[in-house]
Length: 112
Length: 112
Image (tube, rainbow over all chains, first blue to last red; front, side, top):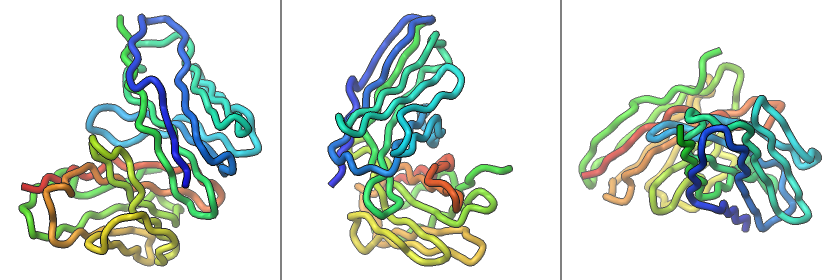
């Protein structure tokens, strides 16, 4: 059974800082890993999807990497802004089912 | 292209009642998945439908059920509501050629 862990649970940084969010998973036989952002009381916004055959994906100031052998993914946010404040969730798809297994999220606060 | 829509956005029910939530996927998406989000358990997978067939089901009691129509719209039903069913219910859809999931804004269900 896939388990996904995100550490730390909360992170506070000053504006402009580069930061890394961590995600680990127990089953390395994943099909893909997806990073989401969730604002309070809202739905999830897809940020990046990394297929199992890929090592990283980039979108603007965001870069996500995937290392299946170590069971880890990281989300790198460059030049953080107050608008980046949200909860960031990673989710893995493994097995034959189209089913996301989520981590518990990292609540990010970027201070002006 | 319009995103995933969910109705209603907010719902208040009392214990023992039943409720039906609706989800309209992004046009062209045929896979629809449902998730429950609570502060204690995080995001948990309920079920996934594709072409009107349930392909996968999470570990929830039989009070939780769903269906998908020929136009890919989906409904989920919860019967005999319990206080613990209070949650944000999220629907996601994905295109045929990708496993990237796109989420709706959710339905906030409160059971009194």
